[in-house]
Length: 386
Image 1: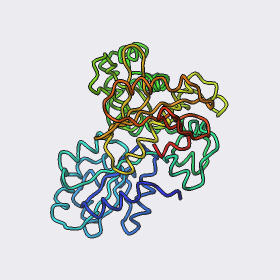
Image 2 (image 1 turned 180 degrees about the vertical axis):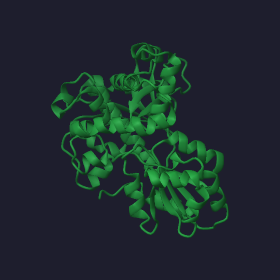
Image 3 (image 1 turned 135 degrees about the horizontal axis):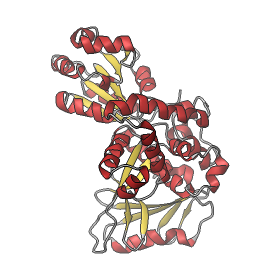
Image 4 (image 1 turned 60 degrees about the horizontal axis):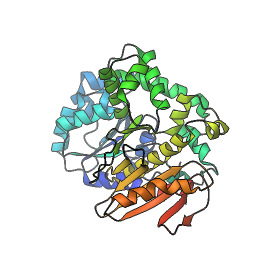
């Protein structure tokens, strides 16, 4: 089993709080991690029909089985009735890490926790495997295109199931099990078309009107469907960085996916060679970097401080990481040969800021450099160091 970077944080949370919720996309490894770290707790899947029926019809009796040693309750958002009874159990115990809750539907889980378990439970978000985790387990490949094509889901990366075969089934399962819980979407083929349209806009500034028009739906529906994709860890919207600039800047978010393998499947990309020649090559490289930074933040419990910046004249920096004392500006290029053009956005952004700025060019090559202009040039496999 690949060692997960979130291990230390999950164990710490379980020693501090009476319960921990581990959330993330379906098949990201939540159950595997929890069962490994808490082998003494019974594992209970609420996707099992008999277990689900018991929990729904007699939530008190269901939970009474686990009061002494607790349990790992998988996909707990499927039974909202449990949360009020969990509140009482947690209020009456001093045990830490009694219940470990997992779920692939962040909206429903968070809604129930906010209503009943606020202050009694901690959160850990677990995304698919990261480049850092693959590096430490000696599973990193020599080309970034392999990682773009296959993404980070353990079934594909660790168990070597073909991405071409696995992702279509994943999408079907996601729609049947997660989407139906969140919203009564009657036209599922149209929803699948909407997801594909989002994939085609990876790395682009979100234009809700255009997305709705191309999808054959109104803007209200498009916004609701985007919210579904966000809350189930399919899509991430990267916020624009405002700063204190006088110049006019773009205020809409950029659209990315949490996993590039899923994007490639939706775009019909089936091999690494196709990735190199595809029009979305640069956007996919950006997406890979954004998702890796998110994994790092989630695994360590850091605040989401990722942004992009672009002004009305087209000057742009792909990622801005904001800390209290300084900014880090990151430009991402899929090319393997460094060009002077790569530095233009970074240099322009530096002229607008009074804060100290660390600038980084991340590219598809393998050479690391420290330029005289202060920019660090990093090869793609150094993403975890960003």
